[in-house]
Image (cartoon, rainbow, N blue to C red; front, top):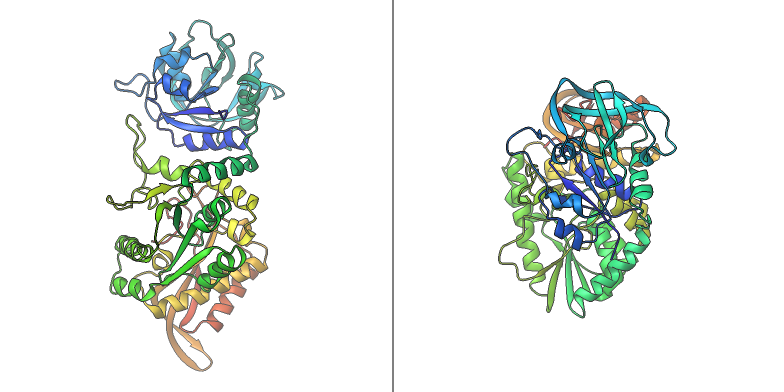
Length: 512
């Protein structure tokens, strides 16, 4: 059985971050709802447990509480923020509302030795986000460190290997946070730290072969990172039993269809069928300006076209998807989980109820950064593995207002110039996203001796780690000038280029 650490989710916005930090230390982590039974964790063979933070207060009626038997499993437990207060509250200590709340940076000072702080300095900066605090320790616990307003900022029961941290070691603002997590994983829990992508590839190939047998799998290939990696992995496992379908929806970027056909049809020699449904998509989008309606139309038409295209393939039993771990966490409300449903993901909640195919989701255990590593392991080229995020509805949500063929043509050409210059400047792979937006706004200009009345293109480029927050990228003026000059001179119908300097929040990365 694979070694794993359980992260119990009490609704923290950082729960996924905790799980990712653990994976970065080469230990497999899995997120469970806070109400998971101790018996389930025992059967899953977990070697350690982390209790996440959360928005609630342990003093509040109806606050989320775990199965108390998790403290009798004989495995190390570490509580973070709400998790620390929960341990204190449930194991006989006392939690009270603090006179002064702690939000943002604070200074942690060690008061005793602990395995958690092996090879770390006596004092360093940490990130706090709490109002309540522990006022009386449970029996068997000792204080390890303090902050300005928390006398029990870190606590330990060495005998039972229970630890509590009032701050958040998982966020980048906490110094030595990763070292603390690593110490818990290796020195306390005793993990081997052997969760590596090469092992995952071998395990997953064997699993796919066992599940599929001699049957066929169909996959809707988009050319994006997730579907591309899923296709490469499944193809390595079962070869020509995989049938890929690429739907040209008419809202792709310049030369995208040709690129997908060349990479997967020629280089990987996959069984790839291309369906040109661009006219069908654009007809349904005609006159539509509301972004949510655009998304729904594109999603509905895709399902229709995809269903029609696979109807002629005999003997297909599985539908493969590039569903990732965050898609499942964000899309499926788990009984007892206090975290609100974030979104309905197209890979999770958008399938027809009467679908006769079984789902095959080989990436559903992985985060995005792990999928990229997997892609490299499988030999996919850099331009696919490190491709920037691209919205499911494609350029339809980067054309403001009605989507027409003329507007798409303008946007495609402008976007291709921007990306070409970003790559030439060695900046494309250093930012989160860079793209153009078509604005249905015409302004007066002068070209030669003639007055023009043409459209506006907005450049958008942001830096981010996870797309939850983003800041506009401070691109060199010389680059912006060159891109603007090329677009205005080379793209007919544009006489003005602007640069978006808004951050997320309050803006979003995409315009629609």
